Length: 115
Length: 116
Image 1: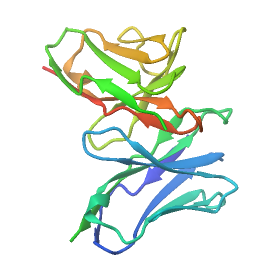
Image 2: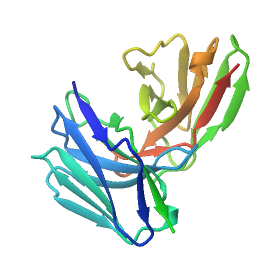
Image 3: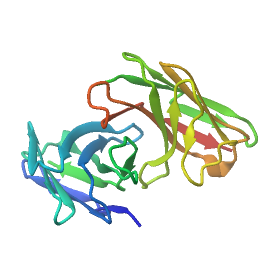
Image 4: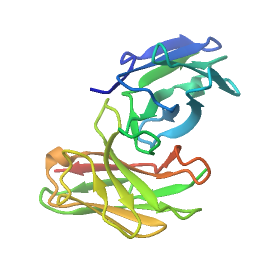
């Protein structure tokens, strides 16, 4: 069956360091992959979308890589700040025909940036 | 992007009652909206896709008679949890497709439902 895996354990890092979160998927070849941020008791907020023909994408302190051979995406936050503390979700369109708009989300990784 | 408003943010009800949750697209006309449910420490699970002017498409295992979805206008979709029971207690979140890039979804703030 199709599956998306993210580190279930929380990630604690020190302020100023780079946080790296992992998203692995199986049995699928998505056309794109997305990352969202979710704060407690709130809906997710879109951060970045990377397409299958893109190796890397950046937005301010965020960087996403996409390795379709490894079936893995890495999400980096450089110069992390306590305000970056949240749960980060990766999401794929896993509808059988592809090209759709129904997203399947990973379980998310909780990031805590400490002073 | 898109601005999505969801109400109420928190509701407590007695077992057996029905609860209606509203999802509004404030700044563009949304032909498609999505309803998700999220249990603590778990991911978002898609419940149904709401299409303006037609019946919603439900995911496998979601009871359409229990979770009634109405998308009567391009700016409003509602989810009614009928005859709610404690096991329906969860965090319900709606989203719309992006206006520019359809693959991106924009979410409401969510509704915390507690059924006593």
